[in-house]
Amino acid sequence: MRNLVFIGAPGSGKGTQSARLKDSKGFFHVSTGDLLRAEVAKGSDLGRELKSVMDAGKLVSDDLVVKLLRANIDLSSHSYIFDGYPRNITQAQVLDKEILSDFNYIAIYFKVDTEKLVERLTNRRVTKDGKHIYNLLTNPPQKEGVCDVTGQELIQRDDDREEVIRKRMSVFGDTVGPVLEFYKQKGILKEIDAQKPVDEVFSEIENFL
Ligand code: ADP
Ligand code: AMP
Image (tube, rainbow, N blue to C red; front, side, top):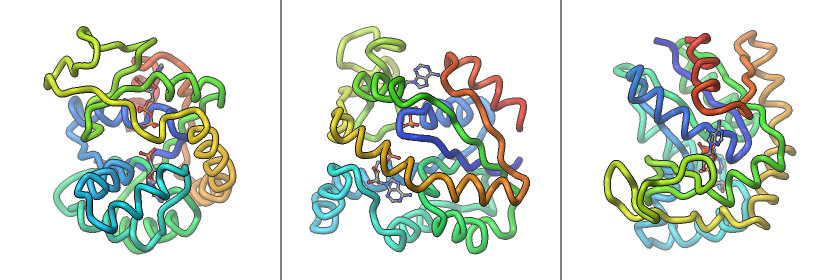
């Protein structure tokens, strides 16, 4: 099975589709955002430093993220979905030349309008580990504030506030162009209309597997 690199703005549905592919196709899922939030949850000095960068909607340093990523994957045993990495051209080059150099992969770009993203993210609720994702408008939990699957409390991420969302969108807009061009040049870029309902987006991805 090929590895998948998901490129898309915050809220475009990468985590939602990753969870489905993990359950139904056996992919492993690695989200650099989840790894960073786990670091923040430890309450260390590093965690506090990371939190202030993330709450401002900015990107964490490339070196730190790639170190965290490498420590959490085993490509010789599993096929991965890379979610939230790469965020810029440097990260895309490191992934291609140093991490996935011996492995087959494609990049899938999730396209969604900005206003739709703001609506999705302000209504997103997740478990603390980020593994279960809900939406108050389109996919609410059966019992308010509680995960249907695990019974864990559902939270709103600190960076899912409108002003931070807009900053994250702007960072994404500033950095994604060269990343898409990189994958296009390699002939491995696929695009999907991620504005469609979850099931339809899933079917589009299935066509590329
Ligand atoms: P990302 O991982 O790209 O930041 P998520 O998968 O967390 O995005 O999705 C963001 C929000 O949008 C969540 O509340 C999720 O339930 C919702 N969502 C995801 N995909 C869709 C879709 N195709 N249609 C409507 N809502 C969606
Ligand atoms: P995400 O969960 O993907 O929405 O990421 C949440 C936040 O974590 C981002 O706004 C960044 O501050 C940080 N982050 C996640 N992935 C990366 C990455 N690959 N490079 C730099 N910062 C990242």
